[in-house]
Image (cartoon, rainbow, N blue to C red; front, side, top):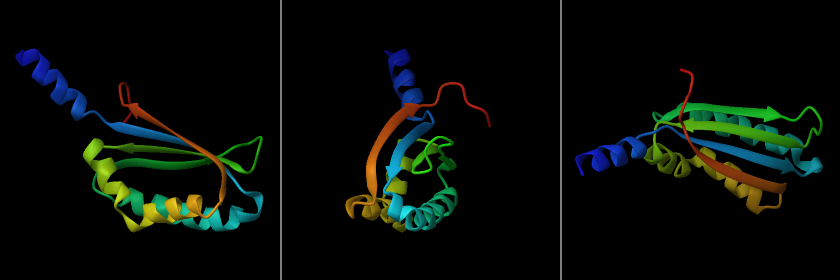
Length: 112
């Protein structure tokens, strides 16, 4: 059973990645770009945030993907309590997105 405990501990401390696939309302792109920059900069300053990248589709200028990596699940919980995270949440709640899907991932083979 010692192996099970160490495995659970190892899983709990794995890097936690989130990929968000979002389509933004065309008339709200400027507002979105302003808030997502604030969210990205604020997130990168968090002690448990290892990466926060925002990408725009080459095929559809209203589609974006965020790639976020956190030290562990506790760092994600901390992130969700921050005011810059609320900017994104409030934007979604106000109808600023056409769609938004989040994928939660465990880091397995990752670069530094």
